Image (tube, rainbow, N blue to C red; front, side):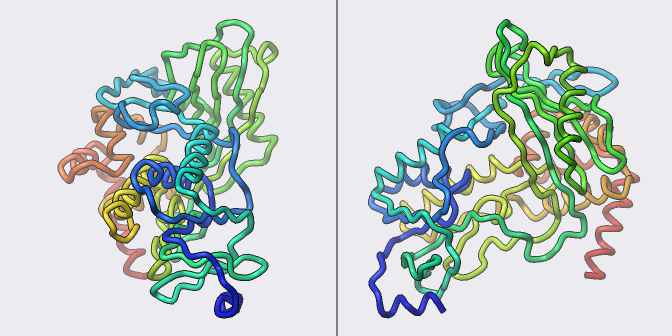
Length: 393
């Protein structure tokens, strides 16, 4: 075993080793840089993340440490169905956009401030003996850590009863004249052609009147071909009045995020903690991830500062995961119409409650109100089917 070479050679000792360096690791590094001076850090990742490779959109309260990094934020968003446009005031929340480059720069500054070691190599083995973890790469042991924070993608430990994906393609479009309305963000536009099994929508996040992210998204069991994404994007852009001949595609973003009620293993061994999607941060019913990653990062930084183990709380309450499982089943089995389901949630609940529910921070009372606003008979059938499936499992 590669870790056994540690007995013969000297390797550095650190308090925390990050395996992987994407959004979850970057948020946690940035939080540690703010709160945990003196902690010894190592980062093991074959790719040193830089530049604009992804965009996160999320809701939360203004006045956070991320505010200076934001590309844009909105106090209201639109949800559009074939029946009409619904403007949702979000106060006291706001919808915000964070591009990856400033977050990666903030994480790199935290690395420098903390004097972190960086290994540009893949981690091939984590040997956890219960008191420390030896991280080995292709050439043998790299570092010994008190704890490992592992953000590499991992499948669920238990396969889901329902397995969908949030998958998308977005174009960053630039114009030579004012085209977009920077004060108006479209959260979901369900006027897109709906797939036979799933839900699709477009959205528009304008940074200025000449620059915006226009995206096509599906919640469904399988990804599309490249041509199918481009066809859908062209159709959506033209349906909202954009003249693509006069616009330039500056950047393209693609993504695939699991929407599953499978069980992710957040603690695979005593001193290894998984972050991000691998740690359960992705909301099964929507694929949204960023807010839970941010909570995990802040919890870990506070714990390290206080001398406690860097183990965050589960990202979502068990009752929310059950509700997500029922919702996924209802959509997957065609018990509810996806567009009507989401429209009904926003119609019958204050926007803040819906968004806080999707973030996993609503109370029992708010959850009951959310359940009461969903279609009772089909959701009851889905809950019964979910219960039967659990018993069989």
